[in-house]
Image 1 (cartoon, rainbow, N blue to C red):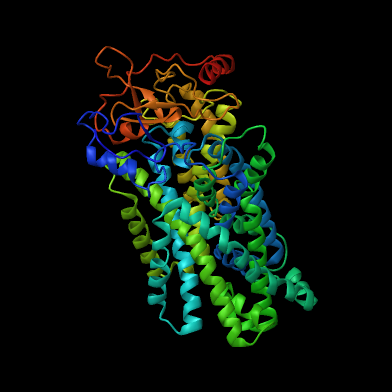
Image 2: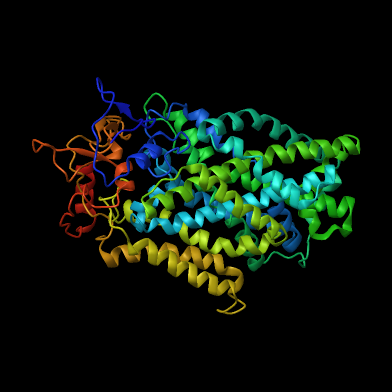
Length: 587
């Protein structure tokens, strides 16, 4: 098979035209997937040759993507509904849970350079089972693109009288020139715009806090539509809206999977960048939500008490802030600049991550790679449709509903990593994502997510009683935490791995525990790829020698010609056997 090597591929020395591979993998299709600079490893491991940034650079880029303004709207919305005390406690509660869920998942992404779909495959879902969770995440990118796009359209309407439908269109198409160029373009955008965003967002807020102490007192005593007392159901209802932001972790992972290998020389910067850009994103997000409550209170108490839920619109919040410092016309201009910068920063990430997710799903199902650009446009069309349906006005309801499925999904993955891998030692400790090594479907994750989602949605709909309804998201979390290890024990871990060995003698990890940078030649494509991407092929060479096949070729192959036969795997005798298997894998 002819083709141009991927960015992690190197042409075999002395050979310009590699030998043709098998016809079951389309030459043009594999070539497009390999050479497409837009692919950004949507369905495979991120190689060392691509990960050329420092840990600090990756961390700064990842944090740039949390400039979204929906946080301010979410905080304002729950503050108006439940009052400051309940809203702040709900934000704090959600933030703590999100950090707990995020630590194991983000660590596996940064340490082993995998996106969330690849992690999910070996963490309870199977090779095809993870498609379900990837589609949940793809839906998240569409919803939040629509919310951010609506905020930008509101800003354009205030500043220029542009009709909302046209503002929706402008906010959609403006990200296309950036997002189609992938990680490199996103890194530059986030680096150069983050200081501007911070200055525009924080300076007027600090001025209000210093110059108007009465605003702070109004914020702390604000009761909203509640009676002013702290109630558990109000706290949990507030947290439920915040939980819908948890898939932002997957977008952070799309950045931190490019972290460099962790070595003794960069340990401190690696862990610092991981902490802030991985699970630590929620600290910044939660702070913005509290600021959103403050801004809504400032509007309703100090400016215009009749605004009602319109005080949740960031354009109104920031225009009023700037008006305390500058003339009205300049306040509108500054607010528009802030909104446009913030919207572009987050929506290039939404469009980028969404296109990766849709591309991943389609390629595995169809065994065909049409290029990521198509999925960028597909994602944007869905987001534009949601904007036209005015999803922004239903922000609390939509996010509360979505949070039930989101938490069922992410808590299941986190539980499989933390408990099934590290405590019970049933799930394979080292993440596996390659076709042929995994079963197509694993009931552990599928049953856990299905059961947690159904029960929490029934509660959300009030079918389990009005007293239970506010706690639906806690049902999703609790059921996922319990069902995941129970299913692993019930199935005795037999649906995780199809094989324990990949047929390659060399180790998958280097001396520091990082994925190996060794290169092996794929006999199907004719190019060399890094060791974690490779397996031994079931097809022997002309002299009976072992040949290697890349995960890319297996993803696009519509047959099982290169897939090694399954091994007879005895159910582990729990911890001891699992530790022994892990030692063999590491060696």
